[in-house]
Length: 208
Image (cartoon, rainbow, N blue to C red; front, side, top):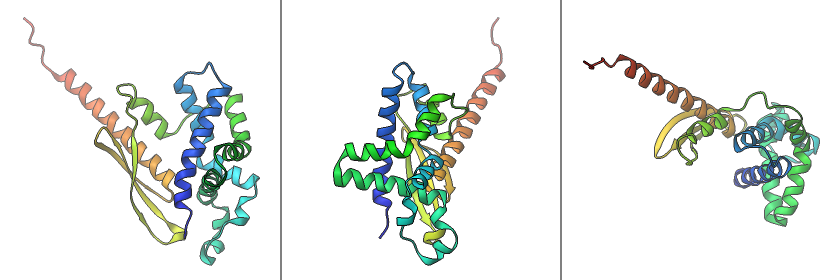
């Protein structure tokens, strides 16, 4: 009835393929820089662009309402479509075929990420790097709710780390909601860090 299970699998396939390709192309880059470049390659914009270049949109099945409101060209729909096809190819033909598809679609983004420094990176990447300064445990994202009609979904996502909920985000796609949750987590962590600094500065000097 929908592509969400294939999107789930394809998301992992795309992430693995891009991570391995960056690791292979740039053997001297440290982990943090590889993480930033992966974020620059694997995002809604670049995945949607890949779907457009490969002409995948014309095969997307959708309701009349979604069609009339431009859903076939919506970035979130095309991004999810690329992941769904990657997942389907992995199931039908295995990783080598899925890898060829992913690299063909994302080669321009891979080249761009290698030609110039990544100007900034997303909230999810910033959050992961910040947390991994103190622990190798990575944050986990959980979809709490999916509301609204198929052409106007609203996703609510929470981010957890070491058993603690750090933030919640809501947006029109799962990826955007994850970014919103990560951004809230960063704000909360910064507020807690600032409160800790203020508390330390306010402690009286009991020295004689």
